[in-house]
Length: 72
Image (cartoon, rainbow, N blue to C red; front, side, top):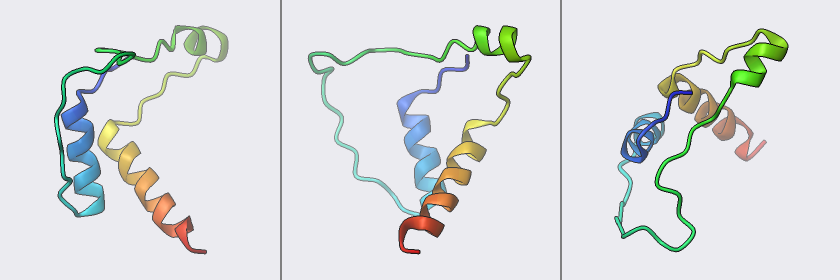
């Protein structure tokens, strides 16, 4: 339930990877969705679980996992 701006997401990836990305901003394309977010109300109601991992930690965890498993 906490939307993250695309540029913040990209910035967190850059930080986790230790690399600067090459960003080419374009107008919205057909089918693009300007804003989305996860509705976790059912998850909370049915399982009493509310995700709490901050975006920077989640991206770091994913990058660490991916890099460790990229070439086993």
